[in-house]
Length: 310
Ligand code: DQA
Image (cartoon, rainbow, N blue to C red; front, top):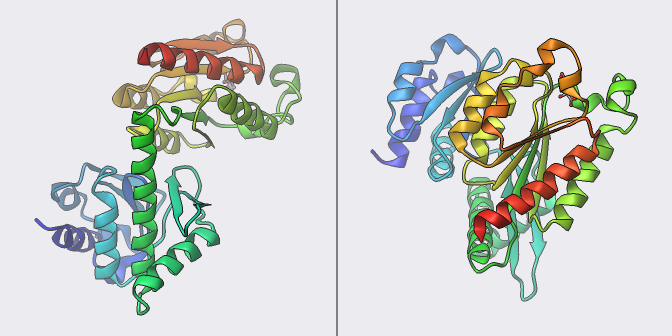
């Protein structure tokens, strides 16, 4: 089955063009919103070659998972069939090189595409083909992102780039500083992010993507999307620590080295906080050190990855 046929089957299985409200390309999946969710045929979707699974998202959304290799080409064909404007989830940053060389890097974690990245792709695309459509520009954007990623991976092979780190925080961690300061301290979430970014840079990580969500499924998605994209995960699942088998299963599925962090001394608090599901998928747990615990986790992760490599 060709990529065009796959895209056409996806469109038909969600109730056709007229049912589609919006679509977005993510690292591994198509994120689709429809007018009438009852028209989605999940069985049909799951039977399409290349589809790894489907997940509902909100009341009228569905995500169709293809994996990182196939998803961009399916999305391109899908937008052509649906006649819609493409949209990308991810951070696209542009590094302007000498001699007219530009590199665009696509990484997970945000839903905005910087205008500079789009205009760089538009300049490149229209230089080679003045009659280019917006679709051509997106394709160019993705190609530039992929090329930069390949370059980065090649560089890593030659020992050029450091490992990539994902820091995940669960519900209410964004309320740090305001939330029960006697337990969690007065430092706010911005301070936590700064600790992570600066420590990751000191330890030689090439990237430190920090993601916080109040929703369990979002955290599962981030862990899945980390597959083949990140080398280490530091996770404070917050209250989901004590309840979530889904997070445990996701960590086990991707098999990326992980460290569990808690700001407070979870083992000295209520009985229910002594249970941790994710702990079984983590090689270390750090708790009770406040936001400094994240710095310790990052240092330990760096030494762990160095040991693994050597
Ligand atoms: C926490 C401890 C959890 O029990 C609690 O639900 C949190 C934060 C911590 O960092 O200490 O939200 O994970």
